Amino acid sequence: MTEILFYHMERKTLEQVLPELVAKCVERDWPTLIVAGSQERVESLDSLLWTYSDQTFLPHGKSGDGNDTGQPVLLSTSDTRTNGSEVCILVDGAGTDKLNEFNRIVHLLDGRREEAVEAARKVWKTLDREAHDVTYWQQDGTGRWVKKA
Figure 1 (cartoon, rainbow, N blue to C red):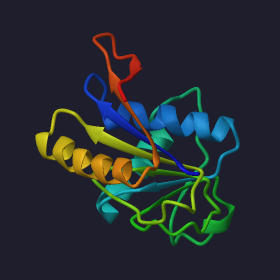
Figure 2: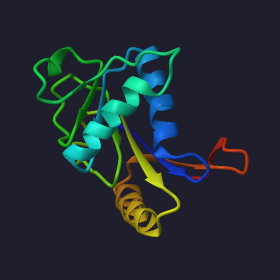
Figure 3: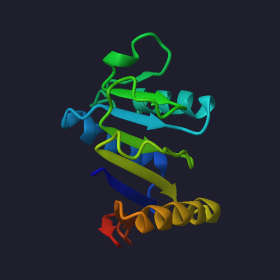
């Protein structure tokens, strides 16, 4: 069964959280797909992953650049698993209906945007009602992730 995780970001931004999650996926050899809401966002996340740290390299590519199947991390506006991804990270309210095609689906939501929180609650309730394996993580006062549900 696919594990579905919701990360409610309050202390850190997407630009801080995403590289950390991607680094863990790469470290564990989990092919990963990051689905964004627009091509412009794909471009900005591509730039982020190239430049976020001088000490770490996160191998990745953008969908359609010619080598989708060989990318350990693929950025896209589509939830198509062209790189054989096991993990799907959804940002900016992107979604997927391919719940059984991934081992893990991660919803990253900006806790400072009420509309993002409300949209995530609706998705959570639907998935929970359908008896999926869902967990909800929220940052505490120190920025540490705490399991809330």
